[in-house]
Image (cartoon, rainbow, N blue to C red):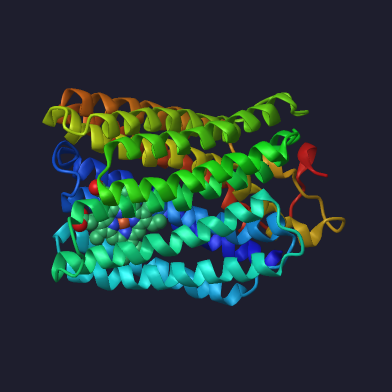
Length: 425
Ligand code: HEM
């Protein structure tokens, strides 16, 4: 566990760098949010979030949680370090290349990221394969590993296609397929499973209806397969039907998650869990926007252009960043505590893990991030760049608060033994 704590903390450290870099890119490129969805500056911004911050934090979480989720040691911990190195080098190359509009270099950086992600999927699949029992959570991890592989292969082909056309048909269709494979297939599927290990742990509540968890997962998987087919064949009715199937699956998961919260024995809902729940709220908004775009794809330019950007923004910087950021607030202090104080319990006074973070900075991150989301959405709705600048700058401020909080927690790793007073156990 201690070795895996170091691995996950390394990934979370990388996520911290991107948590600042990604919204800074938003400030610098704010006007690009009012243009086409495949503007290279917007693609750089998107991947700074999905691969830089969300990817690093999620892999940090996966390498720690997978063993707990399936009751089996991670198959190849060393491969996870190699994956970390490939990701740490590949993502900045990709983002810089997107900014310069150089798709040969996007493909070069992307190939490192893609190989790393394929190794991660293999590591996850073998670990899950070795597990004796496989519940809905294990299946969710397995499905998300599959979709991750599909996403990065599609992304790599899209990058090559921009430099030398290799893909048949319309590249916009491939772009939509790639984006939904990544966001719904990898991230949402993973959260749909991980939530039912994390929420009971953090709230001391119980999952009562595992059938509902499994059914929710089944609906999203079936809906996603259908949605990809509907996008590829450009059948609007099928897009709505399969989009609604995904929404139904997520609603089932949300209702079971709510029953876990209601059965909680820990009365206070802390900022980490609140952020996770707000992420679910943002996801509901993204789903409504997505269904509207599917139903009226030809509605005026104003709606379809900023509607598509708003859809991606609410899903990625709203739903995913809040849920993953909330998860980090709970996992990072625990990992730091385990690594620094785990080996000396009983030998010297140690603080409680819950005393490592600053509740004030946690709230500052959460509230500023929410405010930033609202400001950016106002900018998109009114097509006015000043709101976008204000929104992204507010998200930068949120990230600074989060980094100060995580820096304070990480500081314990280097802390020498000293008398810890009232909080010691
Ligand atoms: C989980 C990982 C990933 C997710 C969630 C993801 C998500 C997305 C999203 C949402 C878009 C649309 C952005 C927009 O329209 O502004 C996009 C476009 C794109 N992605 Fe990714 N991506 C991932 C990984 C990758 C990787 C590893 C590569 C390269 C190897 C890649 C290459 C591309 C390219 C080239 C485009 C633009 C395609 C075009 O406009 O022709 N992506 N991605």
